[in-house]
Length: 381
Picture 1 (cartoon, one colour):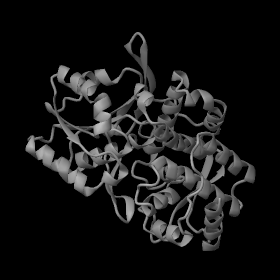
Picture 2 (cartoon, one colour):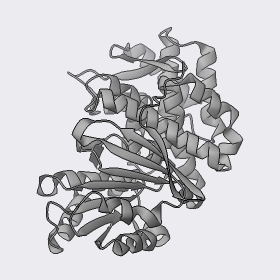
Picture 3 (cartoon, helix red, strand yellow):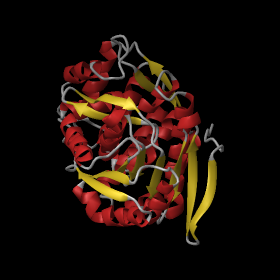
Picture 4 (cartoon, helix red, strand yellow):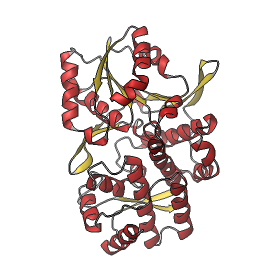
């Protein structure tokens, strides 16, 4: 069954050639729009003006993204009468730390940002998480704007209000739930996205099909060639549907007390793979792709998932050239790492396991024997 809420989906025109689709995240006084389309970046200042934020904007980015899009965004903000302070962080997951946050606090303090000044994240998931963490904690909260430039950030990390930094013993251990005021997903930024990063984003896209939307999963199977070519129609549907599914989940469970845990499919294992390799071997989506395969393998061993559905998941992950095996990591180290994951509750690791394409279930009591069997098999692969 396809579950994509129609509520909140509207269309407006940025100009005659660039229609923008809007997905609204309905959270009462914390509601916000996600704008999806092309040629959005130059117009961001016009939208930000509507927020009635302070005159100064802290733009958080990395050197690679700033070289590509910084001047366009800054120019648009300046044109709207906003002063931009740029805080650059080196590119990479290893820089999503308290040390990086502290350097941004210093920048904000040195430029006298007050509580009405906004923080704007221009970049991928690392920049969005870090900038959001700074926005949530500096002066107990500044307005926050997401401008994701990677597919993964556009379909997942920029939506839902999870902001965090990493700790050497676990990913996203230090963080908060802090919703943005607006999200801008400009599909033109995907033209300069490295193929590895695009593939990583597709892992999160595939996740949405597995957890809630079998029709979307079938669409990904059928349209994989056009998606890889960045065909406008297919890419907009990929982002719009992913955001709509996530919005639907977040609206019902903002702080992950129940339903929102389904968004963690592949992540419990994936976070362990990232942490154990120092956040250097895999980008996030690659680790999630491997984790989705591991979780599906556990589901088959438990008799929850058919072998044919696991094969379908595996084939779609491989179709987008994503990894499915974790290599030389030791199963006992993986299991130990998962026990420290922030998703563990009362000492129990929570696994999101598929029952069918489009349906998953939270499971806490997975026998260690099954975990070792699946991890041993995946290591051999």
